[in-house]
Length: 117
Image (spheres, rainbow, N blue to C red):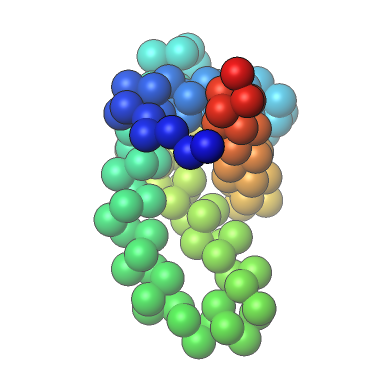
């Protein structure tokens, strides 16, 4: 059963996912949990505003690459967050792609775990 999650709950889950993904990847440095909260907020804002625009602009490339170009768009979003937030340092584009994938995987797992309880 799908639950309606509050903004605070989603922020906590996203922050934990960012923090754990940063801890797991050697190419990502997150200074502290407060930075993870800021990163989660910035990523949420970028994913809701800039990402749809980037997807719209790159539709032909995305279709031609069978959707794999979305990984590059996610890396761009992570790169922008890296530039905006002092507490986030991402080493390379590949690290940004892995970081984005891990954040998605960890937060999905946390949502499912919360639904099963």
